[in-house]
Length: 145
Image (cartoon, rainbow, N blue to C red):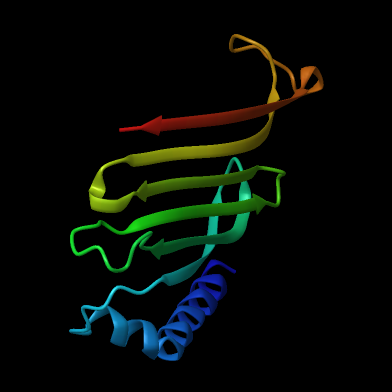
């Protein structure tokens, strides 16, 4: 079963690589014009605690002022995934530069939901003492430099 999943993942990855010729050309291009770009990335994984995980991540890169010659690129990152055992995470981060790089804004919004079983303390815990605990966490952060 593990070999089948591995080979399926490998074939999917190689097909995606061939279908993304435009992205590869952009990465190795000598084009220096400032343009917006978006790069989505699928997420697949497995862990004993979460089970099979799947979702997507992406990065959007842009310039607030394309005529400014020294402005840095701004980015917005996003991640969303869930798993077969109920683990969920939603996250978005922003890194934004204003004209002449005068102000740098950083922001983050994150939600995670992690259910897990608690059996008690010590080495004599029993399965019948199992309690489902759901840990929900929220995070909001903002900074200005």
